[in-house]
Image (cartoon, rainbow, N blue to C red; front, side):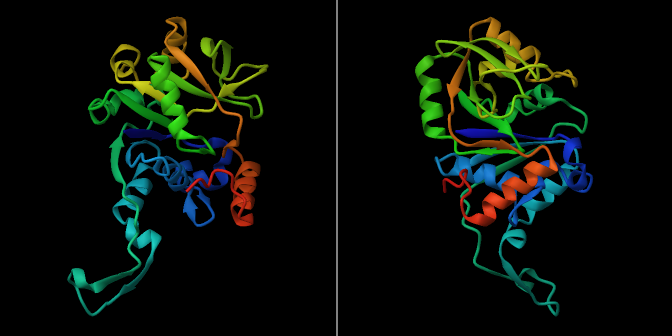
Length: 261
């Protein structure tokens, strides 16, 4: 099982830090929020990740190419020039396989997912989420729900402040998908999707302005191929300085609800 993570946005509402680094690299504690998201998936046995890079993607690329240096203590013997000049104290134990895909600096979410299809179409089912939100999602329950209903797509419905994609739901089936409406009520799009491979070819294309949460999700809903997984637990994006502070305070307190590992 693979998880695709959208890592290409600019993060304009948290510009204080995202002008320097991409939003998925903004830290909670001493690790990027992207690392926290990946740890959440890995806690449920999902260890293969496809990172959809865009804005300042080189920062994410460098982090994973030098993962050991970023995540453990290291001694550098400057008198040597061979591989032995580096000694890592406590090799990172993450059993992850990470594919870094340049999907274009200006591509929207639907185009990014489509452009990474060659790394996702080797299995019938894959997960997808955003690189800027955490939650205590039970990934095993989410996948079991998706497999049980037999439709092409599942979106996790959450109850945070109403400013994301509102879901009109009846008996778990999504009848209408409206991204960022003026007035919201009920559940909203919390990301943490599960898709069948067919979605990549049937509902996505390579148009740079293709937004996953607009035309593709609306079409899936209209075709009665989109189901909602109800999540009543913790979910929090990091879109603003206030949310950045909140997540860091929760982590520092030792009460971070998304820490399921």
